[in-house]
Image (cartoon, rainbow, N blue to C red; front, side, top):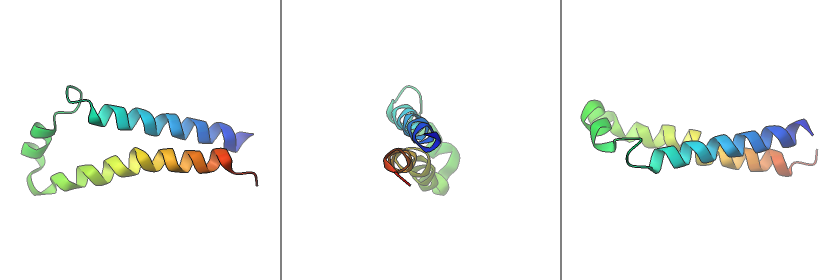
Length: 66
C-alpha cells in the first residue's frame, strides 16, 4: 500500500518535471545555454534523473507486489 502511494507520487512528480522542462515559456533553454556554456549538457542529465527516471521508478514501485 505504501509503495503504491509512493509510486504514484513519484510518477506524478516525474510527469510535472517533464512537462515543465519542455514548455518553452517556463524554461528558457537559450538563456540556460548562455549562462552555463559548456556545462549546458548537464541540464539534460538533471532532466533525465528528475523526469522520466522518476516516472520509471514510480511505475516500478506501483507495480511491485513484494
